[in-house]
Amino acid sequence: MKVLLIGSGGREHALAWKIAQSPLLDALYAAPGNPGIADHATLVELNVEDHAAVIAFAKEKAIDFVVIGPEAPLVAGLADDLRAAGIATFGPSKAAAQLEGSKGFTKDLCARYDIPTGAYQRFKSAEPAKDYVRAQGAPIVIKADGLAAGKGVTVAMTEAEALAAIDDCFDGAFGAAGAEVVVEAFLDGEEASFFCLSDGKTALALATAQDHKRVGDGDTGPNTGGMGAYSPAPVMTATMVERTMKEIIEPTISGMAKDGNPFSGVFFAGLMITAKGPELIEYNVRFGDPECQVLMMRLKSDLLPILYATATGTLDRVDAEWRDEAALTVVLASKGYPGAYDKNTPIAHIPEATEEAKVFHAGTALKDDRLVATGGRVLNVTALGKTVTEAQAHAYALADRVEWENGFCRRDIGWQAVAREKA
Ligand code: AMP
Ligand code: GLY
Image (tube, rainbow, N blue to C red; front, top):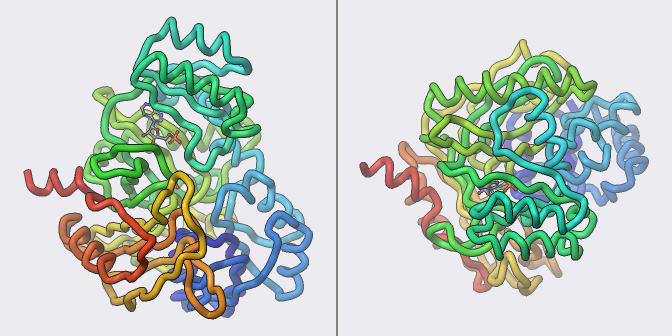
């Protein structure tokens, strides 16, 4: 099979690494890719926003299957256009991608199909949103409706903070994504991400993971795209997995199909495990980044036939097998992230991969043959271990061998699971 992978982050490096191990693979291309992905794929300079150019390239190279990593091309309808051109594609349609592209869309779906989630209202202007906040009181959560690179959410512990967040959204802090605002009840509990494949009819549960959204140790500071993750998430016991499938995932898949937007691809539910059980915080219509890195480390099965079955409506014929070990990834980010940071800072050394550990590239480039950091989140140091505690020790030992002066990382990724393992 000839495969084209779309994307350039750590998630796509992990996907490329795993797809490259498939005996079914004849050739792997990545657009635009990154220097880490270049170890497994031929990089192609394609403007992914130019759907006609992507289709022309796929035809020219006789690509059998396109795998789309990030949300932006999905929300822009790249999967629809590729499928219309007769090319098998992993990734949801533009209509189904609204599950991530519009928080209001997802909240309305939850309301229609009785999916447990926090009480909410949608607003198109500031004053009624503020009145609602004053009536509800804090803590309360303010969300820009659209895609805001993981930064459009304010968990407001005070009313003043909530009112300021509403002004930020409507004053354009998140551009068009903030033209509508969702105000949502604060959910208290432990978070987990639940990954699932769907071909529109069948759902196949993959694995669970836990992300670390805040930039600082002890879950402090502003939200980021994710500073580290581990899998499995111990809070997701067998009972919680079963309840999540029944109460959240299955009604979503059948509801989307009923509404005329069948969902095909991977999605993950951001869950809050509250005293009542699993409640939906949000959906994402792609693999999480950096959660994908830990899932790929743990996946024993060949990834390619699983993705292909998802895209071609035969998910009921495949299964996914997982290693029993835990995997943990630490994000090395540019100093200053998620605020302003220097670009093109040199990375002097990245340690070699072993069976049990690997450094994925997320925001790197080659400049005059030297590896430099170009993004906020730059490297994902990922390791396996018999326990999360062991995976954490392996990951930090490897992270400490990366030579990059402008980098920093959280030192406590996995703390909740480590505390559980100690107890
Ligand atoms: P989201 O982008 O919707 O995942 O939100 C980012 C983060 O904000 C989540 O991972 C949670 O930590 C937090 N969050 C979002 N919604 C809520 C909520 N209703 N209650 C508590 N925390 C929330
Ligand atoms: N790490 C969170 C996400 O990919 O949305």
